[in-house]
Image 1: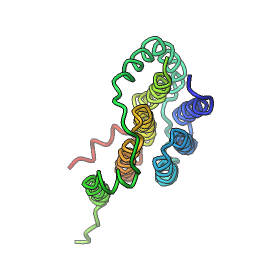
Image 2: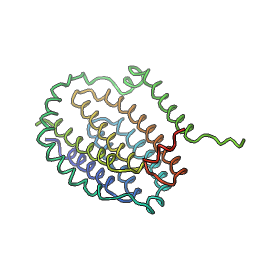
Image 3: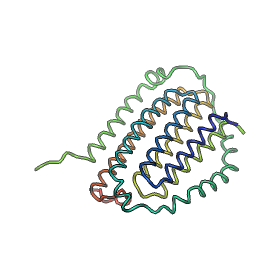
Amino acid sequence: MMNDYRYLLFVATALFALWAVMSSKLLTSAIMLALVSVTVSLLFFEYGAPWAGVFELSVCAGLITVLFIGAVSLVRQAEEKAPESRARFYALPLAFAIFAIAGWFYLPPFFNELAGWARPGTGGGTIGLALWDLRRPDLLGQVLMLAAGVFVIKSVFPRRNEK
Amino acid sequence: MSHFAYEWYSIALIMFIGFYCMLVSRSIVRQLIGLEIVSKAAMLALVSAGALANNLIYAQALLITMIVIEVVVVAAGLALLVKNFRLHHSADIWKLDSLKG
């Protein structure tokens, strides 16, 4: 079995995710999503992946939450005037329980088999070596990806031409 | 049963929640929330596999790339939401098709 702390964090992540999906208020959903990010980053630290944890905590729990709250504040009034039907969301705990029980019989044996495919690495090196040396060409890809994001925003909101 | 199997079973449950949200909701915000949850589950799967193979360094390097992509996708999705909202005063995903052209 997993150690207790890790197990607790997985349960907390699933609970916050359920809360984020089932909440009728979008603001609560956005805050619960931030808490999902926090528990996921704690899991990263628990696994011994501190760099991933720091990025998750600062970018996903911080920046993305701010973006979500900004968008929610814009659409909140319209959502409250014409809310979505909640019936399908209320069915989530039932669907989740059915998936969990059915998955319990089939998924763990499959994942056990999957674990046998792992090719153990040496575990050496540093994150600096992986990011700045071995995967140097990827950095250009990441910069291009961010540039693509900026370009999307620029094309979705073009500057208005008075003429 | 190994640790890995239990961890991935938990990850599969989290991923199910995200997929369910994307499946049943018509709100763009909720679609993006579902996408975020699925993405978190995928990240956990990556780190768990990295820990299993004793290769956490490369898993982390891949994860940082994934976080960058996630930010771009969410920013683009929310930009579409704002644009759609300005035109239709609604966050309904079915009205996105009227943005074409």
